[in-house]
Image (cartoon, rainbow, N blue to C red; front, side, top):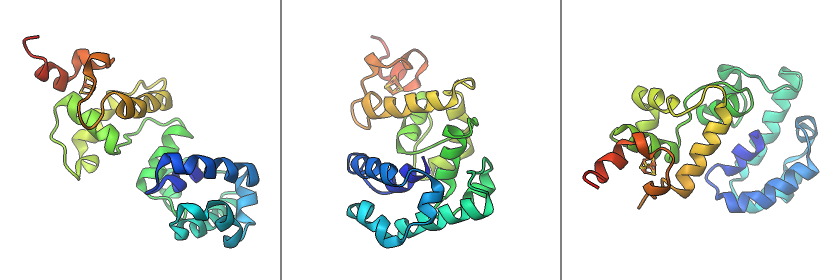
Length: 185
Ligand code: SF4
C-alpha cells in the first residue's frame, strides 16, 4: 500500500498498475526493498519519472526495518516521520491498513462531500474542519476502508467533476446537490 501510494504521486493510475505489479513481484516485502540500490529500483519504476521518490522508497524501507523492526507503525506522527510519507499517505495508511476512522480528502472525496453537504469547495477545502468532519458522516464506522473504496469509485464513475450521474447514485436521497438541482421534478 505504501509503495502504491508513492508510485501514484502525481502519476496516472493506468501507468502505475503494470509498474506496481512488477515491483511487488520482484520486491515482495519491506526488508527486500531496504536492501535494493537506487539503480535496481530505477530499472523497475524509472519509466514513471520522479526519480527522487524511488530513493525515498529505499530510505523509507530502511527506517521501517531499522527503527520499527519491519512493522509499519499505526501512529500518525510515526508514519509522517517515514521518508516520502506526508499527511495524506499517513492518513490513507491509518484508514486502509490500520482500520481507523479518519477523514481522507482528495479531489474526488472533496467533490462528493461538498456536493452532498452543500459546502463551498476551494483549493483549501481538504484542510477545513467542516469538510474533515462532514466526510466522516459518509463513512460506515464498521466498514471504514470499504466505505472509502466505495466513495473513491463513486467519485470516478458517478459523482464526476462534470455532469454527475445523480439518477444512478445511491447517495441521492439526502444529497443537497441532487435535491437542489432536481427541485420540482
Ligand atoms: S446525488 Fe449526485 S451530486 Fe450527490 S453525491 Fe450522488 S452523484 Fe454526487
